[in-house]
Length: 184
Image (cartoon, rainbow, N blue to C red; front, side, top):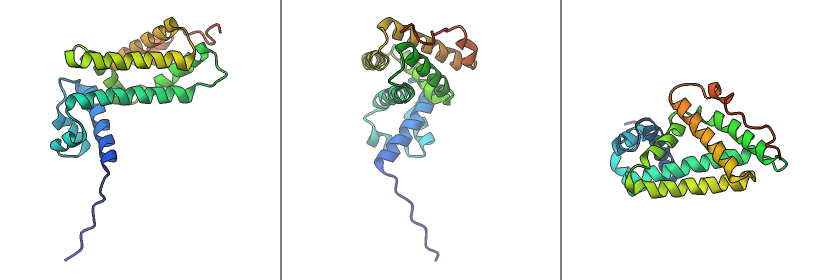
């Protein structure tokens, strides 16, 4: 009898990352209410009960996706800015980096689904807290005024909406005239 090759065991951290990635896609496509843990498990290539070994429940997984998205965006933005850049230039660079990120299919679309799910009572507060933290981090990272960061984030939401409608984000960019140096 031929010897069966041993299956490589996947660490719990790697499996957790796989489940989060699968959840980002499924939540991005179908939203919080329209996504089941069975759908996520199928995409991740695991059995559905294993999700509950990794996450307390679907809500916990969804909020983890929210945190992961915010962290990815923060990391991308931090890698984009330079210390010598003015606040306006930092925002411009971050905006350009974000345009590249939204080509990341359903994972970024999950961000829109997170805000849509804020209408669910038990999700509203943690989503609000995540948004406030992200906003405060943006102000700190850029050195820009809160009103400039608010406008930047509003433009980002417009770009998300246009992208979700299947239009290239570049089609709307010309209308979002961010000053090249922000006057600073």
